[in-house]
Image 1 (cartoon, rainbow, N blue to C red):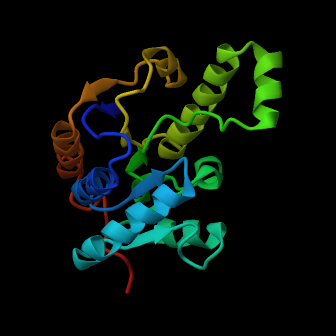
Image 2: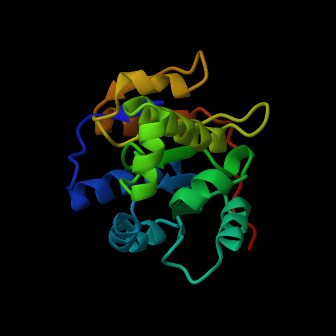
Length: 205
């Protein structure tokens, strides 16, 4: 699990560049999760053509006119494809094996400040409630990466604002490091190159 420390919040170009470079380093097989639909659309519009030119298809919830279940099926069947989505994909993707090698989150998934959230927060202990919600969301997202024995991969969050107290969301023994983007990219690329040559087959034509 890597926490990238030098992608500035609010920098759309920087965020899109980070997504593109990490997906390229992984050779696809990436689930990119967003806390806002507009940021998802912005990143997709900036990187889809770039990735397509290198043979890495990019699917996106709220962009492609396809239901989420079908998007996941397409993603599962093409180990060079990547998929961008929001909460529904964080909770509903079941892609074991080599088709999912990298999970990216663009920021800490704090609850939205709605009236319902305020009521639950008051009843649930204030900030302790928010922390519990975020830990659950992080655990769900990490759980997309490890679906069965033998699965492996990298989980990256592109936010230096990730509090250390929330890292208990991840299973004991998971290595966690705070690194600059270039180091995260190098790690993902090294992990890819260390896999057996047959681990990521070409998509069926």
